[in-house]
Image (cartoon, rainbow, N blue to C red):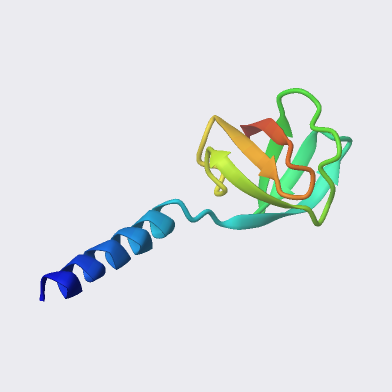
Amino acid sequence: MKKVIYCMAIGMSFFFAFSIFAANEYEIEVSHNDELFIINGEKFEAKTYCFNMEEGDHIIFLEGSPYGACATAKLLNLRTKKICEVWCE
């Protein structure tokens, strides 16, 4: 009985660990001059140039909100593995 409970506890720990750290991917819908991006229907402006962030690339929000409810955000481009800092509009 103790082994069953122990195995269930370990299984639940892994489940919650992966659930907590799961991140949603979003597609760059518009990319203009390495400065302006439309993601999830929201407008984001690069703090400095974000080179090689192209339309169709998939990103993850490391900080900030994909709904534009933020002052700034950090985006991880999954194709280039580069981080871009943006202003939320």
